[in-house]
Image (cartoon, rainbow, N blue to C red; front, side):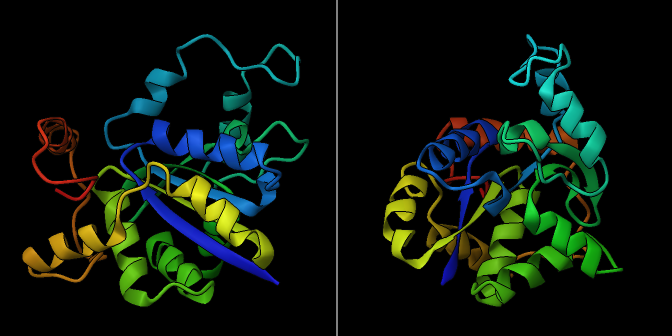
Length: 214
């Protein structure tokens, strides 16, 4: 039986290391999904760094993934890894995100009103409570990165240990939401601006609050 493990991370770089560790542990790319806020346009900046060309075709794998996955998220074929299949999309309430994998593809295809609600629905379908799912999606809105993996039940403990190394405690995030007078993601909320996201980042670096939900 397959089970779904979901974790929230402060930023893309931290989550991407967890993806790499999962793949190294034998979890197929097709069973991993990632959704990262792109409100600060970090993905465009990263795309200007030296190319990643694992398939040796002379084209940056991230660019290929963006072309294939734009607007839908991408499930990479060919075994180059999930992170080579990233695509950029806009989600109502979340704003721009960089995404790849089954979670976003399922959510976008299933929900006509916008993918944010679809992500919440997909997470609850895979075993998360609605409250937890809303906290996860709100975490992305505030600059975090959501990572979900489908793994055999017998591998659950091993994969949870990998994902728990640097993830944000969801209980801490939920407590911050309660202090702010809400339980999680509000689809009517406006996405954060680049300036607001920079303020959140500065507060995190100054240890004001914890994780992507200050």
